[in-house]
Each structure stands twice: as structure tokens, then as C-alpha cells.
Length: 336
Image (cartoon, rainbow, N blue to C red; front, side, top):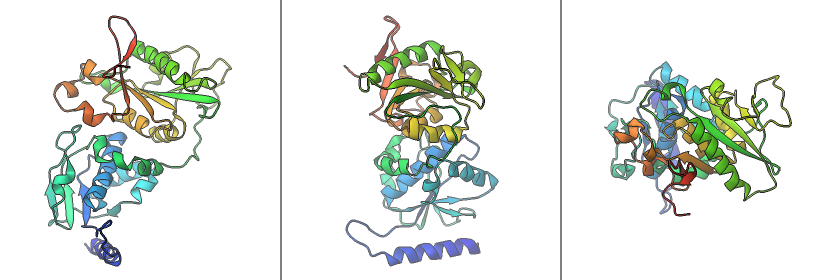
């Protein structure tokens, strides 16, 4: 436990050096959480960004206890996208202290559980035992800071187009493989095609002189390359023609998220419960995000009450659906 004692001593010294003021009180201690180390990348992002947001709300320092190799693998994956986020965490290669105050917050993945109830907890180590914390409400007030944590643009995105004053990039997220299980709502060709047409018409009215290009990011490239005409898979050596309008990404998941931060002017989430699609939208350059209304689907997690759409989807995003009568895309919950 020697290394932990060093970390705690340094933490105590840093706190004592900073005088308490009416606007910036002394930090209370650490905030950490059990992490779903076997889950996927976007779930890890939700957990760590939410812990960071809650730590600021509770005036604590975010921490990660690296209890085994799975925790280290999680950290390594986040480092490729959010080096700035991890710099805000104290990372301790130790077990959670036995005297930590353990509290169950967020026992349902996609419903907000207000951390304000923890303000009166005084233990040096406050350790949460919930999971995922998939709600914008945990951290959205710090969005500008979170966006600044994303890795800077020094990556080869292969043949994917770059957003510019002349080029408008719409990014589409597709989720198929594990979502065609009857439990989740997977991406649908008809909805995706009509939704892209709707988005391009709406966005082009704002920037009429920009060329409209599309990038598809997902888990089934063979499916994705057949969704639209004039599509190429954007790997090395693939010829890009003047008629090419749609690019299927062949980058890593981490690089797709970084690409979104710097290039996605608009984002379409076609599998609404996909956390990866969610983060493509949240980190996107243009912050113009559209998603299929989950209330109109048979997504089991939503039907079972595991998700509150108002907690999961930021209110500034646009919920859309394919109207069964007119066959047109309509905005849900809005009159215009």
C-alpha cells in the first residue's frame, strides 16, 4: 500500500496549499467508481466522463483504482482519445481502500440519478458502485472542457473527406452485428436513406455553397457500402472519383471519434441506443445531431424502462422518425 500512501500525501499537500474561498472551497477527497471493464469503449467513456462531471459537482478529485489488468486496458483505450481527460484523474494501482464510503448511485444505466445527494458524505474516498452513468445530465455543463480533452488532429484518416468552408460532412453511425438480436433497434436502410436526404436539405439551407459529403461509421462495412450509390470504402489505395459522395470509414473506433470531433458537421444516429453513436454526436464538430426517436422503436431496453429518453438524449439534439403514413421524415416532439 506504499504507493497509495504517497499519492494521498501529495493530494493532501495540494489541497492544503490552496486557501478556501467563497467561490472555490477545498476539495473534499476522491471520487471513484466500479468500472465495467468488460464493456465496450463508448461505455467506458460514459463512465469516466460522468465521474469527472460528478467530481466537479461534488468538489472532489476523480480517481481510478487499477485493480487488475482489465482496468489498465480500459485506461489505455481512453488514452488514445481523451488524453486530457485522464490528466484530470488520479490513477492508483491499488485496490479500493477498505475504509472507502461505497454508495450505489446509478443502478439503472440510462436514467439520471442526481449525485447532489452525496454532497454531505465526508469520507476521504467516496466510491460509487453503480454502472455506466449514461446521461448527459452528469456532465453536460462542462461540455466545452470535455471537447477540449479530445486528442488533437494529427492522425491519418485515410481517404475520409475533411470538413471545410467548401465541404459539409454528414456522419452516419450504423450499428448492426450485435443489435440484430431482437433486443435493440438496429440500423435500417430505408430510414437511413430518407433521414440523410432530410438532413442534407435542412443543413444545405444554412450553407448553400458547400459540397455535401457523407461518412458512414459502423460495425458492418459490407452492409454500409450498399446503402447509397457512389459509395467507396475509404481504405488505402481506393480510388476517389469526382462522383464519390459517400465514404465508409475503415478507421479504428478511437480514430472515428477523433474524426467526428474535427470533421462531422452533422451526425445521424440510426441505432438510438448505441452508445458509440451517442459519442460520435456529442463530440462532433458541428454539434448538429439527429437521432431516430427510440420511443417509436421496439428497443427492449427502452420498453423495459431501463432508459429515460429525456435523460439519455440532450434536449438540443433533434429526434426524428419515419412517418408510416406519408413515408417522410418528421421531427418528433416539435411543431416546426
